[in-house]
Length: 356
View (cartoon, rainbow, N blue to C red):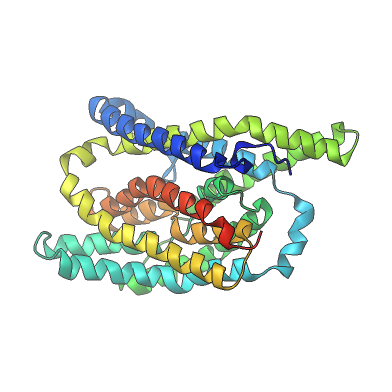
């Protein structure tokens, strides 16, 4: 791997994160402002969807993921079986811990801590929305977080792929158990379309790109060098995609954020505690188990982020478009990007404590 990128230079990662955080902050302000000033525009963009998957957001996320997929070396996938620790941590956190801690935090805050501010019926809806977020681990954005921590792209791909397979079988039973209902219908079109758009399509494009580079290069070393230079040139495009995604997501909810800021803040509290708490559990387990940083950071970040398209789609189908459950899942979308960037910064600043 090339050592000339900014992230490997002394202080380079911190400077890059600082400017990325500034641009994301400006993107949040721009999104909320534009969403309030031009609701018709964002209403039109919101309608460009199928199976609750918005195509504008999908294209932007695809632009972010593609550079990560170019870096996937399929020849190294067979070696992951010799390094199962990161995958074990990810699966344990996602399916044995995260759904239940999210449900517990939802009950604690909306049944007790915030009981004086929220009617009981509304509290039930918000708890349901939080539960749906907790049962839906991330599929797409985790590739971005992995890239920002210089994560092992092949290992990250396997972690996400295994999670997706488990989600097909485990999402509905766990959600039904925690919600106390038995008639949850998994929106298969949303689930399968999201996996296709966010994993399979960019993976195929990345594999094709690698094949072209290796066919044209005279030696393997030249092909690797060319790929490294190519992905470095794509980095600004990837980060612009992230900022644009933030603008669009916050623009969709601009009016709600400005009209109900106190309620948004209340819903965000258990989400923030859950996100940072799960990160501490996963990252701490990886540190205790001496997992290399390139695997430890992504495995912790996978457990903390959410598959918000799936959560929003199920909330709408179960409780309605204007329900408190749907609102809670949307708040999860709004909270995720800035919080995950802060966790990326924490990971990068603590990488010296992990094996290389």
